[in-house]
Length: 282
View 1 (cartoon, rainbow, N blue to C red):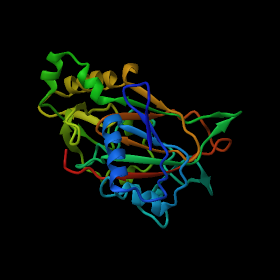
View 2 (cartoon, one colour):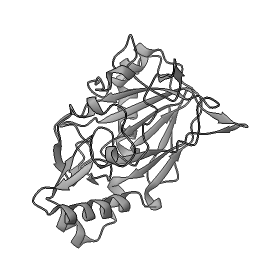
View 3 (cartoon, helix red, strand yellow):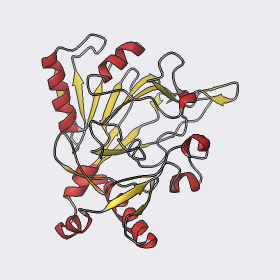
View 4 (tube, one colour):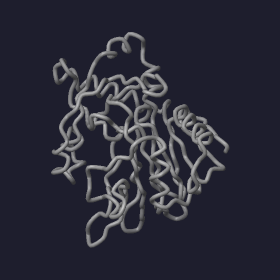
């Protein structure tokens, strides 16, 4: 096993591992330590069946079933299709995923520890691979704040809603009936990572609608200020997909954004997505 860190503040590649085979406890400890340290891990050139992907994900925690049930794999409800492919005029998977900077499922009481994406088809145009995924470190963003700002926001709690501002500004309209089934939740503006102890900013423009005990205008201004700070290029890492990459990221430490620079039907993209449950409520 070879762990190759990226030159950025987050991200690493792990080579010499075949995830189709069960990892020994010692191997898994290495992988988990690298994941906690680097927040984004890529395993290139994997050949995984659905049960093998699910089995690997379960080493990190309970595997969740996504609330957008109509995008679930017909035989493995733990897997969601992330895809722009259409059949009979309908999306087979979540085509709108990642349109804005966010951390997955912050609108749940116990957001996922990790998200995994496995690349089965990637869009290519004239030999160029499209569909990069951009990441930014919410932990390094917190550490870069002035001390006075860190103290000011340390005990604040933000309101997260899946049918929030993102859904009312032109994206997220699809699947609104299911979105409305998810009640709003409240999470700390600054999360303490359960495995590393690092402080991480935990707000996004798309899903944070307010801050407890703060006037709406003031709260939204602060949320926007912190959200813009999180995505400063100093904290970025870009994943450029290759076929059969298995990519996983830490939803407390990072936020992500899809480039969405490809179009159906000339470009096809198909990913299997799994989310691993958080160990404790935020």
